[in-house]
Length: 450
RNA sequence: GCGGGUGUGGUAUAACGGUCAUUACUCCAGUUUUCCAAACUGGCUACGGGAGUUCGACUCUCCCCACCCGCACCA
Image 1: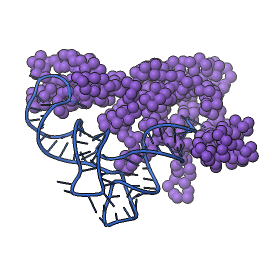
Image 2: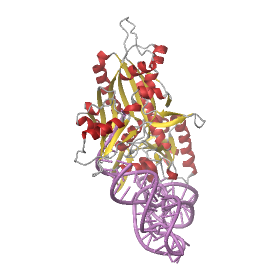
Image 3: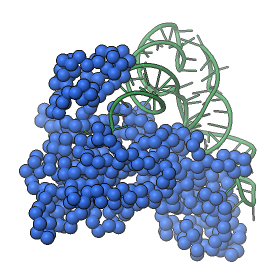
Image 4: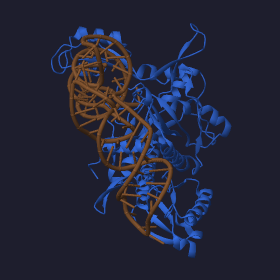
């Protein structure tokens, strides 16, 4: 359905307990969202699948969980304190904003190492106008790093940053992991966790937010093999999308041209997804070279060299970095799952979630709730399934059709109904979410059917 | 951050400078119901926040906040 809007999805997400606006009772806080009971389960299912696929099932991957707060020197060395800042300048007439550094570059100015003041001066000396030929106002710079302060005593506090990416935790622990395990090259260090960015304008539901979750890993390689490893992860990323049930035709690769690439990247491919509001970045795959390890080696004085076991010359490994926005993943999964079809002349909305991602695996209902013998039997089945599967829901509200529709909206793959025949022959009906078809199954065989 | 728009129960909405703020669905309790949002009864829940104008503001003005669209940004 192409006419499904983001509002439809956000509305259902709220109504059914997936995603709420952050701090809602106080009018909200821009760029923050809270996950409700079903949302957190869905997210956890995604994250667990990711960890299983990229970490646990491999023998060249090492998981870590590093601190959100890091020594500020990390962010200086990584280039984020300087490079995370965008100098913007406004056309005084059209009110359009432009990147000051871009305008200068176009005018042939070498801006390397310039601060905002120097750039402003260069702008004035050159008499640069906006692309529309108008005067430019005063530049302002936006640093996307979130600042906070450490220390409880006023006046003795020091400014530190909430991490803007999780990657630096992998780089700062490179030495530790090598010392603990001495893995063969290539190997990776993976992490899932929160990152924070002072986005200028959060947008599009949970797509661009100020606090978000990233799953990513740094894959350390011999630079001579970078192209081969890059290709390997490229295809693994497609395989991952496939496992999420995201159709290949909705995933698009974008070769990021040099001028748009991050300061550390020698090659970047964006994986874009067809969201209801357009084709937008979902994942990134970057060849970060030895940029980060070299910077940390220089700044910390600690060696980042890897000593090959065959006795060949030590070197600082290069890095391939696949990065996955967890919230964006969840959003893509939701958008992709949202299905509208017709049933008995009425609109039926259901979430066609892959079984292993669905927050509720099955719902159990007595056909009628005023017949104690049905309710008791249904309770029995429910207790049994709850023990086996965990994520099972009891539902006896309204009539049976209503329950089916309710479960449809939260993507429950199967509904199990206990009726009078159950009391006689021990079979139940299992109703399929996607086809709405039902099938009689013996109670003993339910678990295998789900 | 700029320009434009929007803001009424959980969701979607109506109206009005002046009694208890409308309706539908959802949700909850109950009656009923032998498989796809049936019916009936009852119930919870809203004017985003703050100032101001006014005898009286959900309605008019201003400020703030959030969301939507465009620009810009998006490591």
